[in-house]
Image (tube, rainbow, N blue to C red; front, side, top):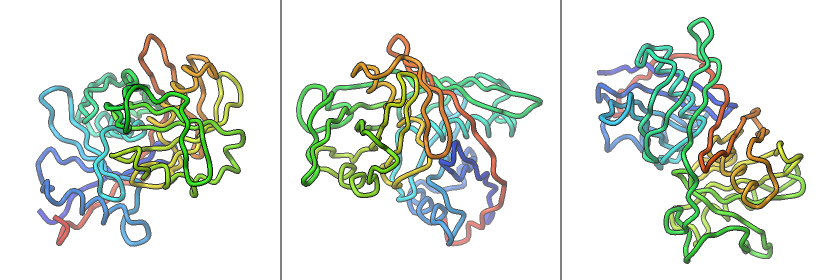
Amino acid sequence: MAELVFWKMHGLGNDYILIDNRGGWLREEKLSQLAQKLCRRRFSIGADGLLLIYDSALADVKMRIFNADGSEAEMCGNGIRCLAKYCYESGVVNRSEMRIETLAGVKEVWLNVDKGRVKSVTVDMGSPEFRRERIPVVGEGDFIDEELKVNDEVFRATCLSLGNPHCVIFVEDVDSFPVEHYGPMIERSPLFPNRINVEFVQVVRRDLIKVRVWERGVGETLACGTGACASVVAGKILGKLDRECSVQLLGGELRVKYIDDRIFMSGPAETVYKGIIDLEGLV
């Protein structure tokens, strides 16, 4: 097969190339390399990541996510909303409620549909994990409001996993904070053996925060769904935030609820265009 249809999609500017690979057109050993090639901006389609759909024995479909650097991610909040929209609008799943298998477990999603089009998606993101070995973070016990030394700077950080690892740091003014300077150093700190996503968070009110995200394997992105959720959870356990919170990211706003140790995230998903990839030499 020389050609394959793809959808270019985004959730608040966090953009993806989505390919339905239930037919097994893409070879496993080529997926990392393919993601790097297709996600390269200006020289290819360009995106923060590659989303792939597979059949699932546990759920309606299975989602896999590859970052722009070719590394595979466990979970992606913006990506799963895009994938759910694709599945509904292309007829893969003909229900407004579906279950999607990820490397972080099976996630349940609910679609807000108007005239056959998905306007927004709510995702049950599950429960946060604070144990260091499950994030992972070097050492023992939880890493909550602990000192994090980065060269000559010391931050107070809270680390947790939502199926993928996060380090949340509260700052006074997120707009002026040098994310591009500290983000990569924290991501690749020896403290985090699998690297880590980093959220820099400013509390505006107890029900409103502004967040900038340095994503593992990508760099600073316009939005990160799991990062938004991690920020709200960290804020709640530190006594800074309420259980329901609006999260303003560079690409727009998400709504996050942290209730009874479960996290629910709601936000939009958009289709930018549909195209055809020439697979010659790629797979």
